[in-house]
Length: 291
Figure 1: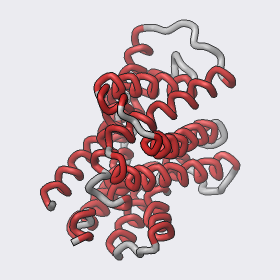
Figure 2: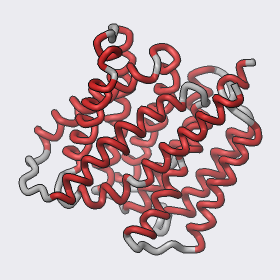
Figure 3: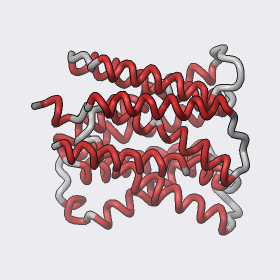
């Protein structure tokens, strides 16, 4: 069981790395596609990849499987869509900080739903992780405007996605849950894109490669691995490890996009790593707490 918990952490660490590359890939993709079309293409590709790769599981989906996947997928789509809209009304760095509040939200929402208080190390780790995200991303004012409020709203749904994903994966398994939630997001995003955004016109090789990378690796592979990892890790534990996305994203932006990496950002990275160590040293796998 301890070995499974370690494997789960390694899987979630890989997910955070893949999500960290989304920043660079998204920069290129936005030169050729509008936001909703990027989400649409990402999840259509991911759904096709999963449904073809796991044809047997796709054919054996039950009403219970579909219901669970639709719930998780709808939550994920709302989180993505509201965050994209909010970005039009606030600074990217400020949004990155506010989006990270899901790390603090997860233990409280989990406590409210399951009527079981997380251990003190979970709260401490979440708080230190939140401070680290602030050091890593926040440069401007912390006044709350419309875009900021909408970002906090989207963070609530990202927290809800982590919790609902962790809940339903125990019931129907990672493969079926991933297939249905991908299909749900693909359907909602494609419909929304056709209604609210113009069709993409000129698509160059760089844009096509970027969106293919986002769809296959940052969506298909990453979210499937997240679902597998959450089978053996608590929601709070998951949220804190996935927060390394901000660290990987900042480092890759420094290397690939030549962005500035300050001492304050180094402190932010170290704070997030410290939060993960606090959680790891206290051990919070599902199996350990259930023994």
